[in-house]
Image 1 (cartoon, rainbow, N blue to C red):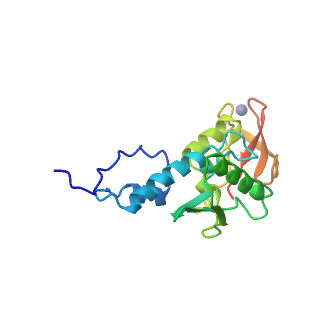
Image 2: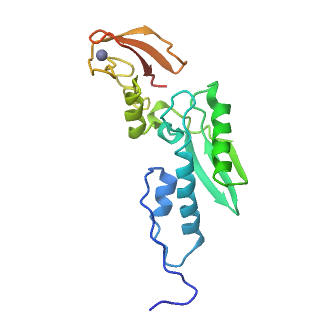
Image 3: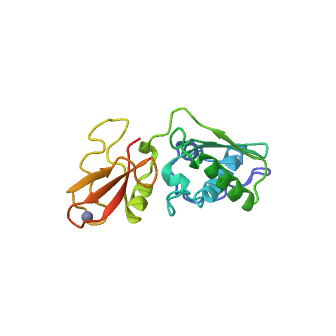
Length: 197
Ligand SMILES: [Zn+2]
């Protein structure tokens, strides 16, 4: 029997994202129509907007793929996004913040502010599996190994074009400081490698 004043829960769209904060809240079953649920629902919509914001240096890879958006909080219409710089001194940081604000405003969100999330520091470990596949699809070898495990980092980088393991380092710095330039000894293609940083 339906009780008055307690709206039945709306069906949730399955989350395409894996962020701990969001998942944690979405798992809460909302039988009371409480505020937590509303906040989660709105957060899901915000994640969708952010998923459209591309990294300025790697078109086709979103900022969510890179794992730099760490947390969303919604409080009394005030939205706070915690965003990590990819690495200290990355020139794209300000530009990324501008792109985020532009996308949020474009989607009709006001009262948005971005704060820097410095701890834990971002590392290439935060790049999602989907992000790694997208990097490869645009000819950039994704980071090999995990910084946190410090094992076999940046060695024997497979060619993103032909999968050959027979590659060599041409330069520690590729098109940007976070990439190194490699060449494949089999297909002869040069490619960027997104370093473990
Ligand atoms: Zn190759």
